[in-house]
Length: 564
Picture 1 (cartoon, rainbow, N blue to C red):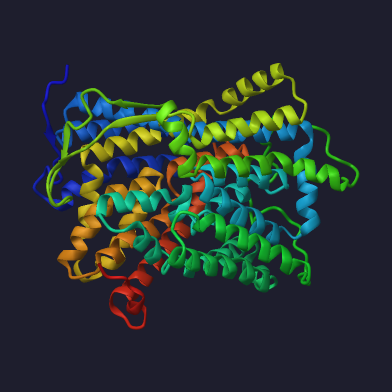
Picture 2 (picture 1 turned 180 degrees about the vertical axis):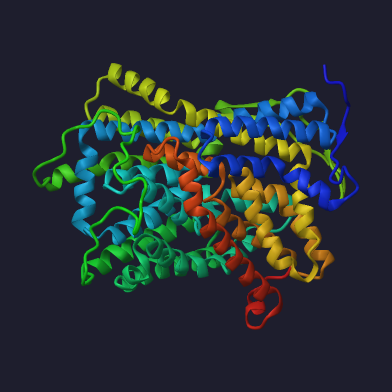
């Protein structure tokens, strides 16, 4: 039986903001430090960091131990569903297509559009990944594009790191606008207005990120060789992102912009080819993943030695077309409204639901923190992916028994990754309910005139901690509104900046790194992925912060700001 009626979060347990902030940062520093060192396996680092977070919450922030235990268990469940569930089923589908040889044919078809690896990156990692971000989110784009890039012959580090960098600009509108819905729920602002404001920030980076992506892969000179194609890809995405977010709605931004970008690039490539074809699938310079044998590929079919026919190419794309259609349907409100009343199970976590009180200055008035595990097993994106995998498996003429055994094999391959993701989510949920993350947020909020910059980095920190732009918006959206109003800034600007800055934290959050390493079979090499993407994440986040500073204070950028 619960020993407390309610417990108020404490944000400055030491009476010193600096000391309290240092204590709050210990679990994150430990986690990133262990992963970056390369000496501790990711699943062990995640578990050890969770234990440390438990100790910080209980012994330093005064959280009752039973509440900390319940919050950790709740986080483990959230790690498995929906995130682990998505990854498991995406990799299951991928392994089926590899085993049947259809992935080798798909590789030929992409090469048929272009043999240039830089252009393949634009098509797969940026444009195709943005579509999956918009339709499913929650790790789906990195899992899918990472697997496809590996199938195309990219080295594991290139496939992992570049998929993470590419999956940035679309994140704020991911999963049919879930981050914006979450932001609206805690700020009280109209989601259409928030979506429009974000659509006046991220298009700058929708143009920049493809250039950045190719420069990281092929160097500045390699990027300049294909700059017209990059401009077409990123520019068309940015224009569609702005137009749809400001004049249509925030729910279909990624899907619409991704389709426009893919169509524009494919059409452009019918009339333009680079003078130099870049055929190396490895990162420029020293790539420690060259020659690394992936463990996720499963049984390999013999590589095709002849050119595939048009009908074979069409069949090779069918599983991914099925996946795209089903995931898009699964993400709609219409579908959820049909299945959730029948197949959802709402489980208020005993002794945790409405027991913990979030108090000022993080919120305007004290209110209890809900803790309801929504087991929406039919409307989970991962369930749609599983249906797509089963349909595709039957189409590929797998026997039901082979589908079952292949699924068991996939679970075994991903066992450590699933443990890691569960522990990561448990850490994020525990720090949220303990108020530890709010302590970090308050440190950013005390920066005065520089708050537009550091408030943007607060969104980055939220995603780095939780692995989700939605969770970061729910976590810090209210704080952004309160602080900006106190400083005389637009609450809509800073709430939107939380989401826009957060997208750059997506590439370094531990669960995304584990998803990438899992999809590419780069097991045990998470430290290399983190070191590869870390500085890109920080620099891009700071650039978003500079843009928000300009929008807060400098004409003509401040003319773009929507005021409450």
